[in-house]
Image (cartoon, rainbow, N blue to C red; front, side):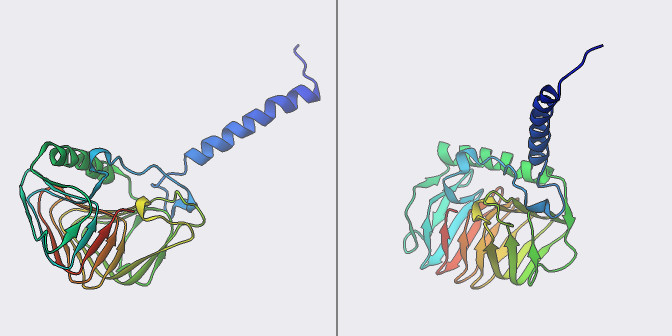
Length: 240
């Protein structure tokens, strides 16, 4: 019969506890309802990383817009309104860079769609506070007023909000308790519209189109796979 001293048992138990703790930590994924404040790995961006705007058919801007990132379109080639709107990054119209960005966006979008739902959205998110996790609506997602994303002290807290059809806003996103815009994703099954003067945070990945009405601003990315991206007057987009 094999015997162990108390000291040898302690040496075996401590590493085992550490391994179990690590395993639990890495199992805190975005599919957990509410997320428990856990972190998570966001979808890959790859060649789309530098784009503040990436469209499938066309990009247009009326006036006063300022894009602090690259602007691209593929397979379409139309980028209009620059100037009078301005951009600090590069312009890519139907070139290899934009095509690579769209290929990466497809992977990003499909990764978001594949994430299992943690919490079902049953009402307008305005006036609510949500914690890290994956939130889903089979149809549209609306935000009237402010929605607060509470990271619970975790700078890696991941938020994914999935709309089966449209995203329509008339308000703002408030980031609190460590939440970072780069870790916020809005996956939209058709088209997204940021209402007038909306203060939006996070990356929008839409299957069809994205519209920013006058004075709407975005800290994140506007990424449309198959349609266009339309800016009004005095819109700003900056990478998170």
